[in-house]
Length: 167
Image (cartoon, rainbow, N blue to C red):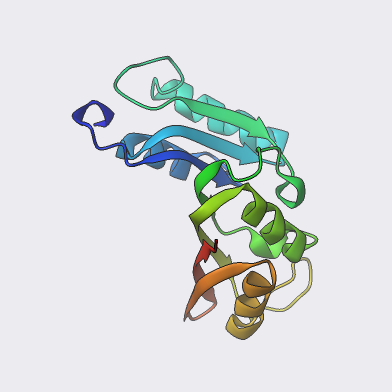
């Protein structure tokens, strides 16, 4: 629990949080002093709040970090520059109209040395409604946004990105 002194980081944001499952896991980890759940969809954000309320996670407690919900566009996040230690961007990069803008926005919010963990779907899925990437395109997008130590792991049509904001 957070009270056992495990808090190692200041703030984390679960961007495109959907139902808030990952934000609730990040809060439960005790590793963060603040947890933000952000989504562009008012409906998904409302579901995230309902789920957290049902688990009793939105009430103040000395035992866990505050969980705050924010309606936000990933391409223009409302966080102060260099204020986040980590960003989770789960299964959504392919949904954003301008993936480069989203990655640049995330990069700007991260502290120097801050970490990005993102997942997305890859080609050969067809670009009908969403824009899918090859692992190479994904690596290039992340590096062009300013990230260092970029790792892209691909398994079938699923990609995982780990990257760091350089100094």
